[in-house]
Image 1 (cartoon, rainbow, N blue to C red):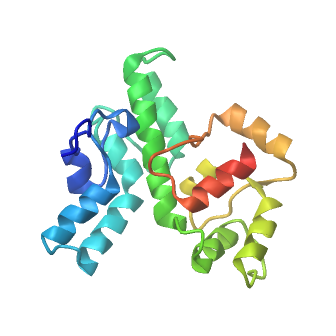
Image 2 (image 1 turned 120 degrees about the vertical axis):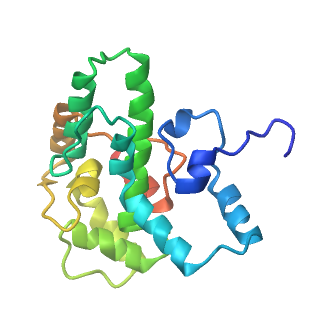
Length: 206
């Protein structure tokens, strides 16, 4: 291991998720995990399928680390997080709330990536996003997708929360900001897990 490099997080290496999120003192380097599988000859379609399923379940995995709280999947993820904070009596400055918030946001980013992809050079990923925000007909090129999506005002947590369902669209960026502040539905401006597609959307919003 190079001098100064952090040891790999065993939880993240085994399951692709860690309850400590970006605040973990160990490394969550995805490349490290991939190299381990390749050296062991385990980079198989089955493993990749398992990883994709794990990413989809990132939110429920996060809540599973707090077994005393009865997580209700049918409710909104942000609503459930703040309900959990109330359940544990965590105020804004509570260290456990800060740790949980960091891991929760990472879990939302992981789920976003699994739903819509990370590669900005993949037209299929842009089409997934266009379908989610009701853009019809589907643009023929990536550049056209980008231009159309720039015109859409949507809360990114809602995109994570309601895949396959109608998502609320707003008529202006100011209306979206007000909704986001009122509901406290934020995705992090920066995340170690964020792929290119999410970074594009965050750049447009912020």
